[in-house]
Amino acid sequence: MNRTTEKQRLEFPGLDNKLYFNFGGQGTLPKASLEAIVDDYTYLQHRGPFSHQVNTWLQEKTELLRKDIAAELAVSPDTIALTENVTVGCNIALWGIDWQAGDEILLTDCEHQGIIATVQEIARRLGLTSKFCPILATLNDGNPLEVIKQALSPKTRLLVVSHVLWNTGQVLPLGEIVTLCHQHHVQVLVDAAQSVGMFPLNLTDLSVDYYAFTGHKWWCGPAGVGGLYVRQDLLDSLHPTFIGWRGIDTNERGQPTRWKADATRFEVATSAYPQYEGLRRAIAIHSLWGNSQQRYGKICQLSAYLWEELQQVKGVHCLKSSPPESGLVSFTLDHALSPHQVVQTLEKQGIFLRTLLNPLCIRACIHYFTLGTEIEQLVAAIRQL
Image (spheres, rainbow, N blue to C red):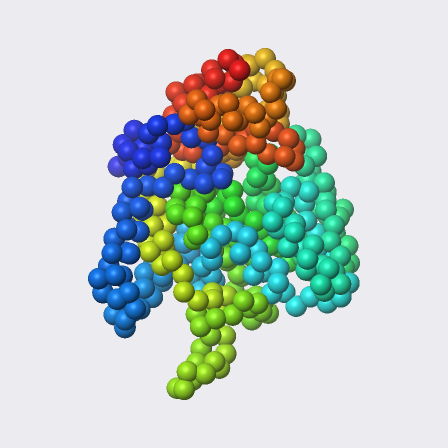
């Protein structure tokens, strides 16, 4: 039987003294995750921290996390490289492609600045071109698939796109986008910062090429643990850029002989391994409330409720003209205070939101365990500004 929301919330002490709407930035860590991290660090000091026994134990823990993540994404564990976050995963893919001078990288105009900066530097160093397609304008009226189709050119080698746009909450039709791009011999790198942990995923069915994600947002895991999915048939053609002992095989003299056969070739060296168990516990905690489809359904129900309530507040304008299909609800206010000042004012009242710059707006993030009463308190506080 699934847990009640009230019982589930007891797992998240970060919810106790605030109204928290920043899951798209960082989720609230479950008690079980924090306890597991402390327990694993304690074990390391007791048994090592460096020994044959400890190293074997860490390897086992690492593979358990890889398997759990793979199960959540419906892929084989050998296609998952463990990274620190989304940006690292995107960098692995972006720098690892065998670029040729004149190749083109296509991005949407809603990508994160860290990824844009990476693409710009690769283009500068390697003589590539990059351009943007206007996805932002399709939020309420338009066809993102058609916009991408019109932007593709014979020189396009890669599309960089977010599954869920971090600024507006728009969910893009990723399967259709991947099919379109593959028809034009274009690979697809997905920024999955706002999708993993929010809704059910089957990356095998989507046929996506590269999918970079993190554990610290909607999975509510510790900061510093994420991953990159690389489609099985692309492993040999994507070249490691940062290289270390975790990604290579060695001979009897300890000399490197070749890359690992699977996605671990993109892993470098020592990590904060106890954090891995923290993410495993967080993933497991969510399953106690319900499966991924049930959790996503609740997220959409609650975010629609917030959207509907905000529609009733004079001077508030939601960016989406229809109920959101994600947990992200972005809006603007006709107010003397700037969005940044509004967010600061509300934070002093224990209400946590975020300001975004493009477009300039305020973003609230709704999780499946957010309470209707919390949404009502948020709306009431906005009315009183």
